[in-house]
Length: 62
Image 1 (cartoon, rainbow, N blue to C red):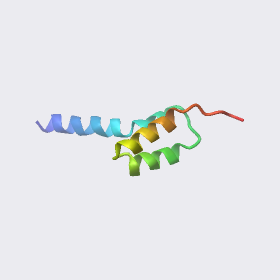
Image 2 (tube, rainbow, N blue to C red; image 1 turned 90 degrees about the horizontal axis):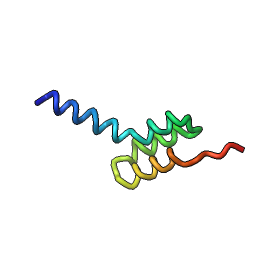
Image 3 (spheres, rainbow, N blue to C red; image 1 turned 120 degrees about the vertical axis):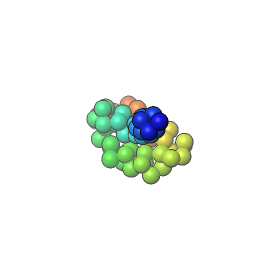
Image 4 (spheres, helix red, strand yellow; image 1 turned 120 degrees about the horizontal axis):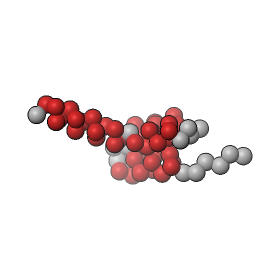
């Protein structure tokens, strides 16, 4: 039972930090800001979605 609880907590944490992981993988210039938004406002569904969209948004290089 403890193993399942630990596994569930681990999976939920990874899902919660998905926008940050996407930003790191895509080498976004503003990964720190995306992480901060995800950490502090990710608990609300709106903050999490905004962080994910921001991480997935195409970044134009000028």
